[in-house]
Length: 151
Image (tube, rainbow, N blue to C red; front, side, top):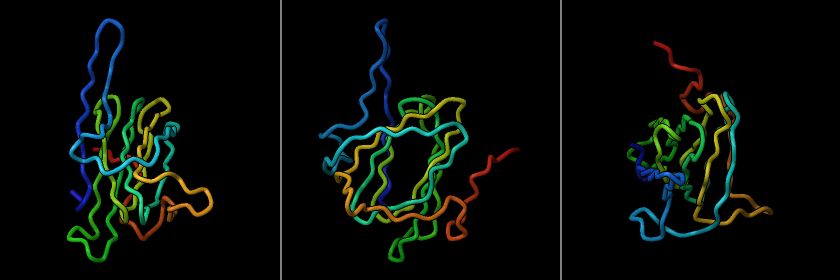
């Protein structure tokens, strides 16, 4: 696991009325601080990558559909420099992923329906000076191929 990345398995509690899933709590061991909560979606087959933050920690969970979430550690002072982590999260594997500053991250919707992502970052989004640093999804600076791995 990339240094500083943490995960939390999420438990779905169903009953005859529906289901409940706690995603993130202020008393969780991995909770740092609250910035905002937002929802974003990704259509089937679409890749949203790559970006990182210098200040913000992301806390992401998928509440509908499935994503392949991939992380890359470019940090010079990190014991896991150059490492890639890949997670399949969503309805079939409910999980929260905490992504610290400095880690490139992105995802691909691997299901047949739009994926819905909830993020609870540690900082509110700064519209005038966003804490986002981007590379194209197919950059040669990150050793990762978004194609499906058959076999």
